Image 1 (cartoon, helix red, strand yellow):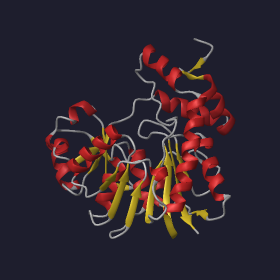
Image 2 (cartoon, one colour):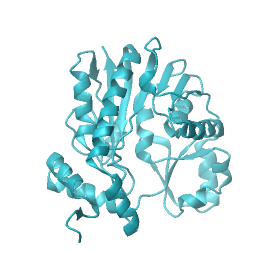
Image 3 (cartoon, helix red, strand yellow):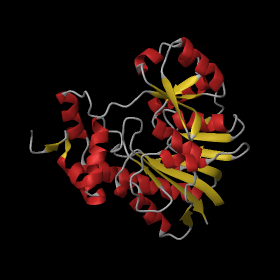
Image 4 (cartoon, one colour):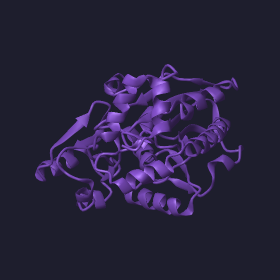
Length: 310
């Protein structure tokens, strides 16, 4: 084995994980990188119902499981994603292919009908359409995406899912502070250290991981995360709440970013309380009340924090 690779991941990443979590927990994370994850989707209740989708799955003889924290989330056992894309319920926007971990932030956000809600980095739209579904299309949702091509993909998914959302093609760090919102979702750009999946990967793909997953990527991500979170606090109405999330398990993209913002004195952590979420495969977090999900067969590595503006 190449001395610069441990379990086919860059050596520096393994060292960062061990420094943060210790060898035993790091081994658990590395095992999560090696496992092929189940295909999962969310029922789009704007266009369908859990009962209708369950009927279709039974007709197709699809083995599935549900999860305790969301009746709309489904885990599939004997079907691949490419096959699902040919299903009528997928093409009609009645279901949305989405990882279980990425369904958590909108649920933690607890959006309500009639609220002004901002999704700061919205493409491709999984969480945005989920917020629209949770609020029965009765919230004033603004979705921000700075990249024109990604914004077009976002628009396509919003239309397909029947979600009423205003799309702003702009860097959300540059939104005028005259705007204000009742709730904000900041699913921040990150290194993706929680989403690494090595099972079945080719040497070429592994080399691509080593080339692209760099310390510079993490540093650039942290810089963006701090700027975005500062802007989010500025745009959030006083006394209102937001969610900060990443698909990273590294503290310097998660807890350390939040701690920098908390030092300003105008925000506090709201502990995430959901008894059903106790079943999640959680990693230790440096901030009590936040969630850090460990990658495994069902979940991507993910971090979620709920923040209130004082």
